[in-house]
Image (cartoon, rainbow, N blue to C red; front, side, top):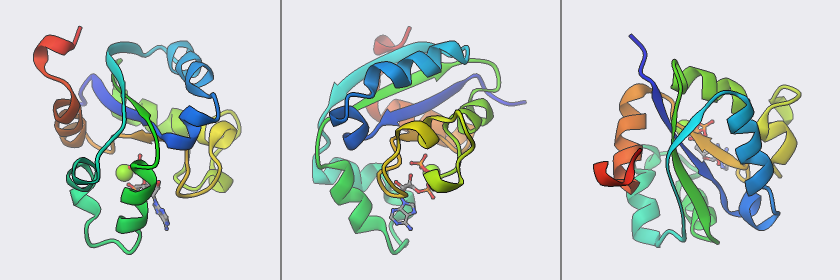
Length: 139
Ligand code: ATP
Ligand code: MG
């Protein structure tokens, strides 16, 4: 059975471009509830640990550099079938391939600067949510 939580990050340029509000509006309109949320600036060590799964990928250091370039917003989202539904809402990794109306189509600058992160499995959603939030910080 699929789980009811996913985890998202509003990435550096989406924050500095002023897209926090419009992105949260899309999340709300799509029926997600915010379970936990906060703004922070990742250190290099934190970003390396968060993206450990991508360590062997050629874009790993580039990704870590980008994700530490400015403040981000992290959040746990609740909805039935949250992981799959949120991936649909954000669109393809490459915004040029993302469908009309998706968050990445509207707010991404490029493949790397693609506005938001969304968990790709229930297991990763659980890991990523716990990376940033304790049980006491979730509602
Ligand atoms: P995310 O994990 O952020 O939700 P995703 O699951 O769609 O995105 P992944 O394959 O997990 O895509 O890649 C993680 C992130 O790494 C991407 O969101 C993007 O910011 C960056 N990225 C992916 N491919 C490239 C690439 N070829 N060059 C630069 N950055 C990339
Ligand atoms: Mg991913």
